[in-house]
Length: 515
Image (cartoon, rainbow, N blue to C red):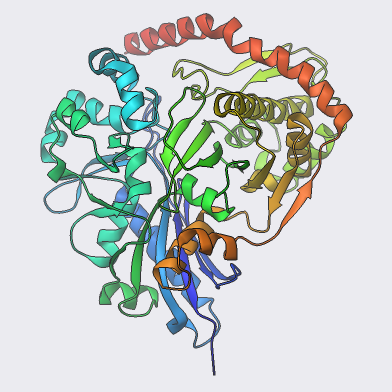
């Protein structure tokens, strides 16, 4: 009997791990999932235990393999990993955590951003790494650990991203990763695809304490016999270099042409376009592309669909205990006019990346009245996220000098009819909804398919495996209304920035003074 060859795309994201088996046509045939816990030990601190990344990986892989048709596990020919970016682990001589891994959501390193930007130069940081000074890259967490936990800094033999940790656990050997897993650490020379000597010298960090980095699709090893036994994977299964979930998501939507933007409507809102050339600009952050050729110019709003979950958890009486709560809120919000009857929200609940690059930015509710209901707030949250995305896309178009013709939407928010239609209407661009919301796992699967020899390039794998999309088209009359609302929204950050800075400073002093 001839069986279809398979690859596994493993997506180790912030909250869970998904292991999905893909065919050469990009069809998912089996999927396993497992949660990853996260600790919030104090204000602005978000941490994980790397051992939980591993346990979640084993569980998801075992679940995926168990769901394959009987006798087909041996058809799996390769695996690659998509992982949460900008999360930094600290491994000691015994490959145990010297300190809890600091998650990309963490905000403890604000002071290090200010100090290092002044000493090294904000423009130099941007030129080398493609990223303006910001909370998200790991660069400033290196500095925080040096200054606040010197013993943990000293005890750390290797500073790892999620992929390099999982590769070592899967295959043994030293820590190693792919370019697109290394570059989000914020210490990579983006033009030369290597660790930046200038930044390492400034950090007093020897390159021997970092993973080795490799082009996408490089074979990094084969699974250990003990791993094969624990998961059901074939013995000696090759594992190929992949990396950051954002870049893998772009690949999973076949974002390999300049005028197509992917938009991941997930916990964070991440959007990007591909470019063959390196450029850096305050309208985006620049990343290495998953296909190993060119770059991704990426927008990011740190607090995306997280805001809807936050609102329901904290302020909707029935909360998530009512399985239909989101459907009910969406239905009610859909009956409310554009602009939520005078309610406008600034969605910077976790600081602002592009275009403001302000870690002190915060959420703002403007125009709230006693007539507004929970449905108004719910709609205003979606409108805020959507307006911010349209603003950032427009700024990117102006900077690159050509139009983005359409979005390809992925992530849980792409399942929302209200949200995807709102994005089309507000942007005036078609929104193509991908067949799979698991584009990061699919992107990893595409890299594994190339590594396994199915295709002659990662780009060819993307073109063959990305599948069809369903288009949502804009309503021109509503686009005009959203343009007026966007002109108001653009003023909100500048009108409140000084107040937000003052409040963050005030709250910090009170927190420090509290016994």
